[in-house]
Length: 550
Ligand code: AHR
Image (cartoon, rainbow, N blue to C red; front, side, top):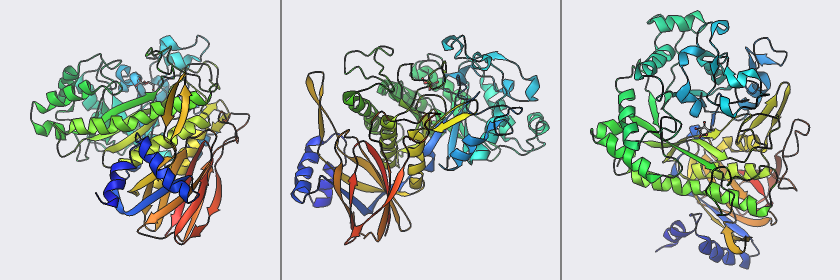
């Protein structure tokens, strides 16, 4: 085995703590705590910008209050859409936004959300029963003010592509075709195109991404994998494409349930391999929620707190999130049986931590939680996972954009703030469309005590990409206490200059709120280059981007 094969076989995997420890001995001999080796001549594939995507569901304060403030609002807006959100989102180059759910999607009739805005019906929201009785009426009874037109307009304002999730549970396939027709049929060609034009949108929206059901093993219809595959085939047969390629995304498993994936693909392929080619993406959802330290698998009892946590909770959350990497690789391998050419990409269209209620900045907002520095580190780690698997991951959507789980923004009436997660997205945008590079990280494994038994987590990890003469290196140091003096080696090139942007804070609980918007903000500094390589100290509990000019 040569050096390159040795590195490939050892240092990349997150679960190989013993190798990291060996490497860290070598690093320590030269007074380094850690070492990063970027292999400029080992491209892994182009990082799809779509992995930096978002998810907005018609759920509590996400749409009404978060995005839609209304055309008559005193809050600055563009045609009813919150102006400050638009301004902030432009900074992160959002590629794609998924709407209207989530679970809500399989209860939604798209026809309710089109036509003259003041004539649209009010409907009971899917999330009604979990709403606080004090919540605004729009959270319980959907006023349908924000429908297809408004969503597409929001996407246009921020420069993103729309990704619509269709209702497979409670509407017939015909309505799916009609929604496609409403969005994509040429101006003047159909009655629905005329309806679109009558409300100000003459030209087709050309929506490419279409989800066909959501969590169809659960809220999306309680199907078996085989039943769902039959429905998926039916829904996606002969959908009019108006000469624009449609990308169908199928509902993947509950967590890492491989049986769902196996069952779906076996059933789909029973009608021939061309059926598989009709699928653009296989949706994986990964929420890190179980902070019970192995005590329970109960969805409610297992949750932790968003803002009250100790270092063990910090590492436990990251361990839960880190499982996404093996989910990606195991599902990818499994799909090979039905899809040997890997036509179908993984679409991780819901991801993030999910805590118990109690940290909402706006009292009563269902599923809202207050992101801290821990969630920023979690988010950097997740985006690095995507970057490391460019050939597998076609899209990612963080759940959810505003006033919800792993939100980039929080807003209520005229108050607004960018969370630490939002800053991570701004930092990582530089990877979009870059060529992912094989990169080896070596650092001492972090050991900690998990209720009487020993546990560990990796010491430093990240990803790198190349565009022209610029290398973008991102890394998280998950150690809550220890900074890492790190040697950064560029194999196959030399650094002329480099600049780091670091997101950290003295307190691991640090967060931004309406009253204190700048508690966690990125800071930039130059990184000295010596003989083409770099030295950098990654602070404890940090997310870092280093942009290196070759
Ligand atoms: O993001 C909240 C919910 O989580 C979504 O509606 C659903 O798809 C998932 O279970």
